[in-house]
Length: 462
Figure 1 (cartoon, rainbow, N blue to C red):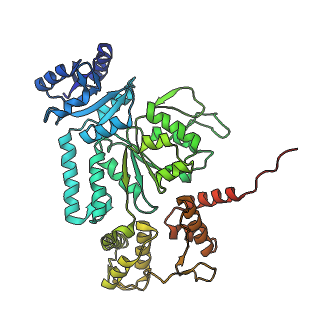
Figure 2 (figure 1 turned 30 degrees about the horizontal axis):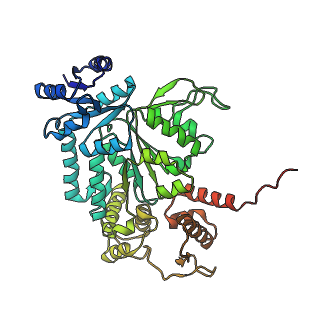
Figure 3 (figure 1 turned 180 degrees about the vertical axis):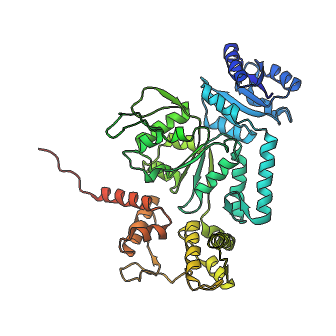
């Protein structure tokens, strides 16, 4: 039988919590202060410690100051509010999760169901790291570059905790794969991983998709619908392109993160949310806040642990490894393995990859199809071309230069680049998005914003 220790100076709260924990099949001990907690830890080391932060004789986190005292226990904080400072400090010390008062029974049951001893998590992570040493693969990611090793260390550090993660990086760089790695190495790995592109859902439907709706709540709602929070219950909800989420919905998402509660559209009954949120954006978060696309308070809540994913051009030494892995997978699927020539690998490595890893995968697929023999040369591979001024005369296959004035804001520079690229490729949205390394939906949203900015103001009435 697993053993739990509850450290809380409020006798009634501790007693109620002990009943709930015992109902889940745990033996339970309680302590009202740090002194009693140390005695209980020495008497019977617990599998899990539910630790209140504010205690009569000190701060709950001081238990971490004594080497080995709770090293083999999963620690879950009990707090009145999950502040950013508390979350960061808890992360550094290895806290697995936190419960916000008043504690919701479903959230408590979720935490208890995910009980995994730190030694087990460490062994699993050691296995992943050993595979990387052997092959260059870290879970769903490939690469040996120093830039990717930094990302791997961050994943390893945050996966075993319950804090929110914000992944930044260009489109096509692999943000969803980072999120999947965090999930697969977490205590929630046996539960669903649900990936949602906030920019690909109609603004009129996104609230219903995120939180669900009741039958008859609006025209066309013919039955009750489970939203993303219910479908990902117990697991991880990955919100990609978070800056494309409407501002009014960001307010509701912030409330869920703060309280763990939400309501379906058309309902007056609160639901308990038991999911870990991982968000991602291809924008600079601070720039998105300045532009009014992301609430600053939501950014603070999501950005407890930031992971910046490098573009492929910043880790070109990984290109041959990635290309060969893509090629091997295609060859296995088609039943006809092929290989790259040395010249092909050199050309792939020299290319800048504006579409990042997604573009590389597409290029490998195309070169596999176009190559007739067992060896793929450099005939069908992209190469750098000399730039020309953007004055309407550049050929479609050539690169072009966009001149940006010193003093321009990031938003102005982005706008100028997108509109110039769009014009250069003769308003071909798919080609423009691929060259810029952004999704088609993101390009559509940007062009729509620019058109609205240029629209003439409505004349005054009367």
